[in-house]
Image 1 (cartoon, rainbow, N blue to C red):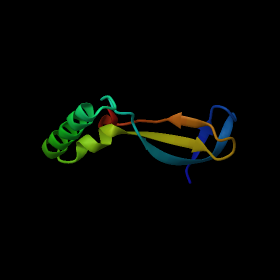
Image 2: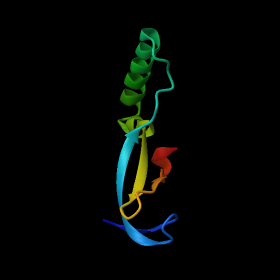
Image 3: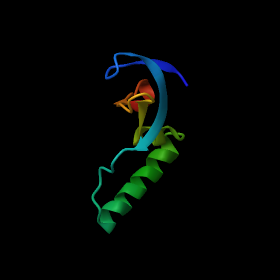
Length: 78
């Protein structure tokens, strides 16, 4: 596990990372879900798989106190 500075603890602690799917920009209805499916299909096909990276958030969690921090670094998260 990588050691990082925890803002809440105020010291270097072990951290783990996890990814979580971003909430959908489309509504809960069947028509909106179909639009989301088609949008994902088209962007996934045209982007060579990089579009899937845009649908997730990367978090790091301090193992000492449980503080969760969003860390979407790099061009692939923009």
